[in-house]
Image (cartoon, rainbow, N blue to C red; front, side, top):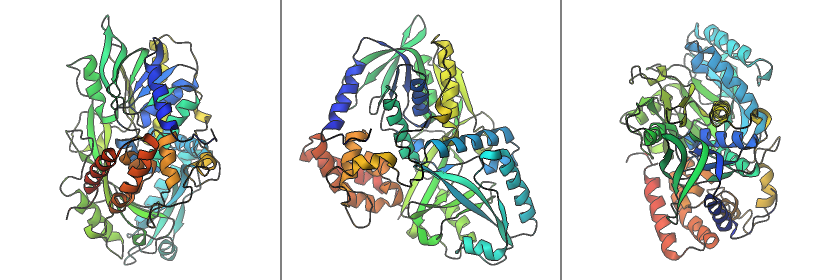
Length: 521
């Protein structure tokens, strides 16, 4: 895992994986969807020793799994809803992620400012319960702060009327790179995980799902793949796949949109995050230091559609900015926003669609009459547990040899204790590649070697793959990402043997995409 893959490795690796799709074999488990849940399912299945194939229609984590609030957390907001089992479960998974992906998941302290006398004892009681639910695997205990210590932690917090605050701990992660670590862990365990291979239909034999039909988006090559169990882990699009098995299958999901704004770190300097526990409409709002910027979010707005590139709905940007202004001495405006991104949550439930915060964040493993296994709902923090439940069902349904999940203590690809480098143990191999340490531009950390490595080892196929998910430039500053695009396209063309027309098309397509990450003019 530490060797330099070498130029052309990305092309050869993809061809080798596509060749495996053409083999006349029956996979134990076929997973549809390359987000958190699908990748978790593939890792779990491979760790049990089953043959597993995962296919993703676009890039790994292209959807919601790269658009999270970047938190691995128990869900403080769920305490108020008395969902204690859900909180305890998520806190246990938080501890496992800190252990299993230490290069990508790190502790983060939050400070909740209090402006009313009754707020501090209420918050202290709630966060004390949070500590209790975490048990021995908690990060650190919450603390009551006076006004001076609160300002020291949050230098730009509004001091007028401040009574103090409460500090507690959760964890932060790089969602897209954790998805990549899962994809590479699948390969490490002998499985196959392919991006840009959409499933066009399910294969039914005797009224039961027996495999999938796949098209390679790059070459147009088509494959019919047999599977003893087929797992639908496509997030907000899971109902669409369910309807491939049965056209009249009732919808089980009520998608909700979460919008995030990225501003300069000066709006919240320091290492601590700020949590507003209750906004005007009952939501919470986070202000989080993230990769040299400050992340503000999120909203919780119902949507009836499921766009691949969701954009803020009217009022969502203003809601976040207006709420932030009340708590900061320096008020961010639309002109200060460097990037805007939105993700869609696959919530389970039918209730009042206007109140998506009341719908279930918990997950459900559904088995259709045709034998399609669908994993619905959930969140990043509990992806591993969701996957374990799904593969338990698949194991039983397909009558596979009974084996228990080994992922609770499975270190993910690149894991390196004490490292803040998202490449972890892969850094050594990356640094041997041409262009190591050579930045593409002064205002961005991306290097020539990182672009080449993204193609050779991480299945990057487009400029967007690199600038949105292998590196997070698009989410950090959309204009900087646009400026990086030509250099990234040239390097990728060299690796993939593409021509000038490909470069021009890639730059144009990415620039148009990045325009949608900029605030409205």
